[in-house]
Amino acid sequence: MNGYHSIMSTSRKRELSVSTFASRRGSAASSLPGEIGRRQRRAAATRLRLFRSALRLFEKRGFQNVTVEDITEAADVGKGTFFNYFESKDHVLGVMAEIQLGKVREASSHAALNKKPIRTVLHRLAKRLAEEPGRSPGLARAFISSFLTSPSVREILKRNMQEGRKAIGRLIAEGQKRGEIDPRLKPAKVAPQFLQACLGSVLLWSLHEEPALGTWIEDSFQHFWRSIASSPKKKAS
Image 1 (cartoon, rainbow, N blue to C red):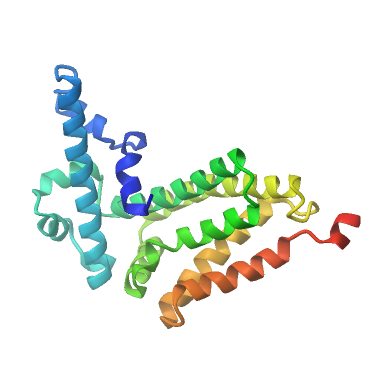
Image 2 (cartoon, rainbow, N blue to C red; image 1 turned 60 degrees about the horizontal axis):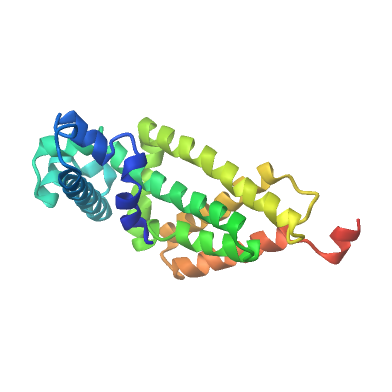
């Protein structure tokens, strides 16, 4: 599942979910199940269209130079519709933080259910976390700018990163149980190092624009893994 479609699959979990939207209109209680399902799909599609339109504009103009009116015009919806799904322009990027957190949760839950090496799980996660900002250097710079200048976006990001660090910490602890990761390390300290490797790669790529982001991510991950991987010496000590 890619990042954009996860908006639709996880919409019920969000504060401004489709079901909440329907109940605000006062129609959910009196509607048939099939009718509610259609409304939810339409509302999720509208939210996704607004999100995609906003990303394209942020990429072209920069976050600070885009208004709500610009987004709704690009998405071909009324301005009032925007506020049924997002509290503000800043909260559009909050969806990005939700998408990233969803990827971390998915990696953590899958690792608990299967026997794939934790190295493989973390490697795939690093690549997936770079998918959305990796659409273009301009979009990555727009994200970084919004995090630096918008207190509300920073708060959303901080909240999601706190939960993300805990989930990654669980992955690290699982890797230690399986003998893949140095047991002397503290998962709570390793988790932010993983995020720093990913976010730092995106930042540097957005500045230099080459080589490809995938190369930055790959190099950073290999260095990160070598620093935490278990070895015969570490196991014996």
